[in-house]
Length: 377
Image (cartoon, rainbow, N blue to C red):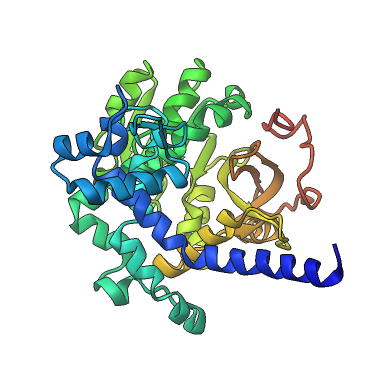
């Protein structure tokens, strides 16, 4: 292959990359349409032709066929020689009856409210300000509170997202050395229920707003931990109840700017004993992105920026926030791929004392001090 052919191939690959990105929102909307018209639920038990599907769902036959063949090209459906469509492993994740369903998460990420906010990304970059309120007249969480169907969708999506990693978190942190775990902003209790199920000696308290706790008792009952899990209605910006020796914050801090995060962390420190600990479960951005970096983590950062003014953070960002709020960062360990989350452990610093910060980067934690159980396999 001569230099001209090499340049042409390289140029073609670069062009395909850019054009593929530009088409990305179309793939997302095809995914949304599949979720909304219940493609996965209808194909759960048997393959169907697009005409059979259209007859059952009341959709246009030709348009349905065009969507289904697109879903084949995207890897969500397969088509056999007789023209019947069936679910692939990826497509089956849109079923609403699966414990690992991504249906609500897909609907939330492709919802007009998300798309509308993202159309203001350029303005967000120019001003540094979130765009959701400019588009919809209210801040994101206020808007959710006024739209029950969106609030339910959001809470279900958060539960689905948490369910993917709850077992890993419960197994790879030594919750058993603590007496009471306080899950702050824990929604329907998916993570706390798994922690309590895996550690029978531990008690748990779930703190969140009333509307987020509506199904938490059912979650605890399903995990058979109802006698060890209690619910506490409250706002973590106002106060965190005392009594827990370990606080857990999963996917909370990325919703807020630094000043708001400091308020939350200070409320935690006020409620924790001097030997208490804090476990944060969040994405940790690498200091320097590379071409091989997980682009979804950085897209999540932009999503936080454009919708609610939050952000994903680097290890150094977390260390600085924790230090200012009265904690010492003691360990950061990632969950195994493809999971994007890390376990970030911090210990309370007694007033008047300073503790040396853990080494920079992802490291094997100090076994005598940390509850993180090492690298993941």
